[in-house]
Length: 405
Image (cartoon, rainbow, N blue to C red; front, top):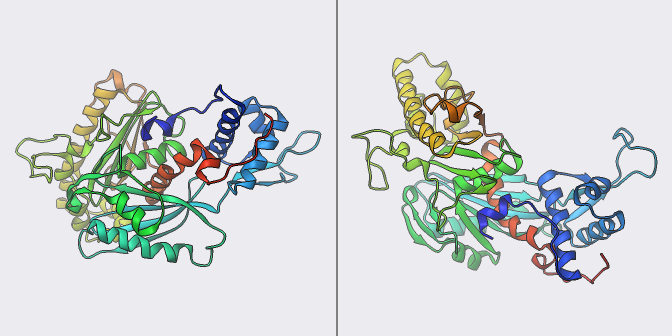
């Protein structure tokens, strides 16, 4: 199963030996509470079709592994007659280190099971960081992120959300134009420097992963995602519940959609690409903001009475619509999610797909990303957790005793 496909897979019981069945069911329970939030044992019984004693045994194993904990429901939680059913929660002490290098900063976070960002820091850089600088700054930052909690936290890996083309098979960064990286063995370097398993993928695809599981795209099987950041514009496509990755993982580079003739030179070597024409830096400069103040962009653009700002916004809106028109006509999504600085151009999403064919957009909805600045970190964390969810016991390095199912 590919890294993309596992994200949207519907877990189900597998046939095979008793041991295989136990591992499969353990993965099902952990996946349910990780992606769906705390659930009572009774709810887990209903969702899985397993009997109560089997659920009790599986939950006990997850507790023993440190992957879950239980609480008793409060009196106001509407329990029916009989003994109340304990509520199973994903552990907040099992964490992934999430890293998102950008042209002017490195964002590093501590993400717990359940997709919760516990801590995050932004390390400013004077220029686009090299891959070695990202590795060294991450290694140093980990100590600060876990300070005082070293004994309580279990780090299961490092996820890297890279604004560039990342080879699916081994996490090699083939090219990240804005960072000036070519064929960088980033995951290999990170693992060697930190001692933690490291995985990498395209940042925009990971942002979509987060929004699909925990945000605006939850429960939607056909969607297009667009995000704009300091390093350009990226995106992703989900069709029939499966992430479209392409042969090597380079699909859905919406930033390199052709939007205008005789356009600006793009870092990819072409002209008139969306991300060469519509940039965060130009919009920030227009209203006097720095990159660190990007969250203020939408408000200042709306409040501005400068004709030059209005003209810039109108031009950018028109060009983004060209890219969205192509996406809607090609993929016929049910939902478009917009994130990053693009939300400043479409603060409510209205009019984004106005130029697409009428029929494909009849039931189309446009939504703003719900996870804000956390979406890339959550997505990078999910990249790490996806392996844990496949086989919790083996991923934690524990062989539990065989129990009857």
